[in-house]
Length: 209
Image (cartoon, rainbow, N blue to C red; front, top):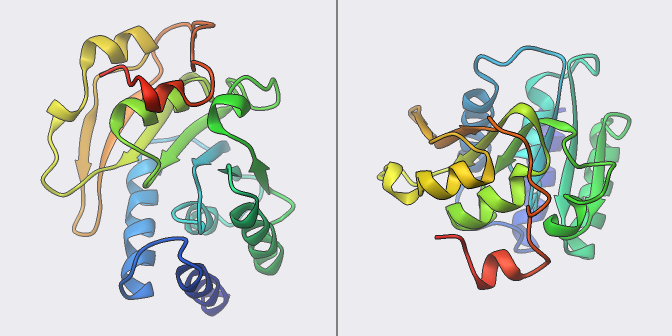
């Protein structure tokens, strides 16, 4: 099955769903990001991949805990073409029973009762700048849930505005790193305001910081 996953990722890359470079490196990064995301979490849990695109890290994360009693998830993307690709991918990998595809804008899905405050973990690899990722992710998280955002190797906490994070109900970022991935880890630590997220397009047009 790993060969199937590699082939799926190769097809996604050929379709322009993520950038160039060896598939092995993309997969290694996603696997390390998944490890950083899952570290210290208790199981079972539900995750959401925010702006999944070609399935990184969502498809790789789904394989981190292959037992359906331990890990269920949703891969969210706003583009029909990418959602259709992901739908076929989860079917090919045999995980369609526990991994759903959500075709929607994050701002809309976050106000859907089927997804609002439903996830223990939200991961974001290339969704957008910190302010957009934080605002669009927070409403998906259960109280105490964790947001994990992939970060550049040289990033520091100055990319995150702690005052605005507190307004969202998120903790200051904890920076985690391994040889192949870097991440900011934030926790939902307050009640969720009805303000978040703002209407579609607003987080991008008028970011909180």
